[in-house]
Length: 34
Image (cartoon, rainbow, N blue to C red):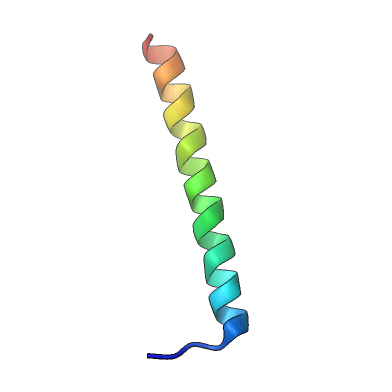
């Protein structure tokens, strides 16, 4: 299973972005809960 490095890079960026959004949502949720 091999994907071009450019696509792999784009996928990683998307993954990192999604992770950041998730963390942001979790932080907001924690703040409003406490």
